[in-house]
Length: 67
Image: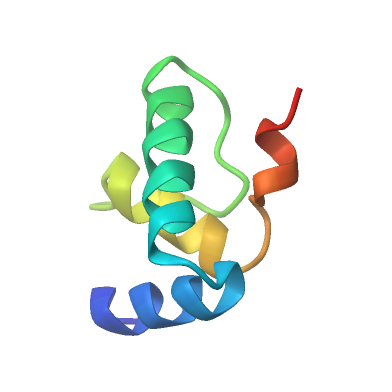
């Protein structure tokens, strides 16, 4: 799936550009810190791509970051 398609799907899943940016930022930070991805990691996928795919598939939501 192309990055634009993933972005559109993630935006539909979240409903707000601002929330999407916040989720992406937090999830990318987690992935860089060593948290295991919730999707299958492809050969050339960056942390950005993985986080975007997780959000688009509904595997990462705002509830995951609520304290």
